[in-house]
Figure 1 (cartoon, rainbow, N blue to C red):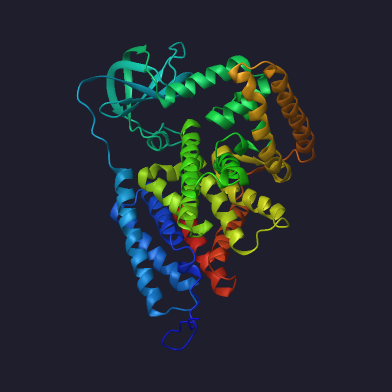
Figure 2: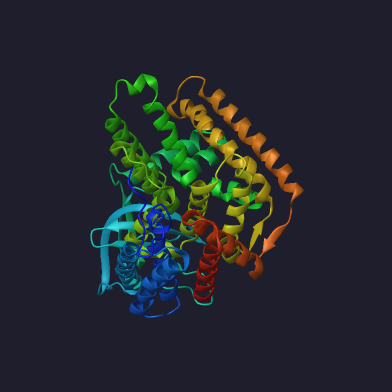
Length: 493
């Protein structure tokens, strides 16, 4: 057995702590500070310089032992965080060139949704991805081939509104809006978007109301307005947003099948990994490519690669890697509340798993996730229902069984098998029972928590402290380091 490494003073170096446990958490922290800074008007280069300072500061404050190898490693991560930050900050502030004159293009509609009194559509044209806002009587669906002409302008925030429309659409790949003077639609042919539309139409025409709403949300990422309002009242809106919970259910079910005794003896491990990866990404993209779903898909893909290579990964490091990949792809994801909530919840649960996750800590983890999400949700929506503290203890384990069961009960009706309506009615009854129970439990805690800086600081502090505790043993230095980073985040955000 190798002897334990020591530094020059003979102090033992613990290899599975801090940087050695989850190194990418540190560049993610630095990049987060840089992106928040550049959004407040700080020049991109200056904001990018904050990232290596945050990395170096966290390492120096949190690390009790600092052998030369650790300092060299920290320097490399600080340099990497600067490169990543300067790239992301530059992309974020760079203004896209506007086409001159009238733009006449055609392309495939990849997203359509209501937008106030209009319909917002994203069109993948040959030159770029464009945003168009059309009157509600223009029936345009995902997968349609849309020809349009009009004047191009940069997407800008609304005057007098805190909502950053430019960042919202930039996270979805569009930075130019077309004020269309004419449009015409046609058949776009086979595509992922057209398959989404066909499946959506089939669900709308065949499934009973509650089952239809839940299946649209879980399979396609399409929310029913009435169902969305009910889940907002219950504090369980995350059940309707395709995220790590849904992707994890799909991956777990598929992996159970591929690793069963019947299949394992006939299918090589790497073939099973390839099949699981294909279904994983197929589902994440079919469900609309939401940031939470993509983050979970990247994490699970890393886990599957580890299985294929016979190596065990680290959950906290995997969350950070997935978040960095998404920010490198589209830096504006950082300002999307869905991306933030997804990463916050995943990092918190991964940090707990590093230390003490068990069946007895699940109730505490639900409370921690609620408190950690509170600053983001309250800042965007104004208040957070306290019912979520109680209902999520029941909803998450319940829906981990209810969603797969409802899918299999609904599938016969969707494909037109005899007796399918009876099975779908069983799913409808289960969702009805859930809604009755949810209303009853929500009635026990009918209050909401509005924005409160003390509660926000508590939620943020517990999140930072939990993540720091996943990297280092909880001691005075860990608490101090968490406090320093929280102070930096408060000052910047």
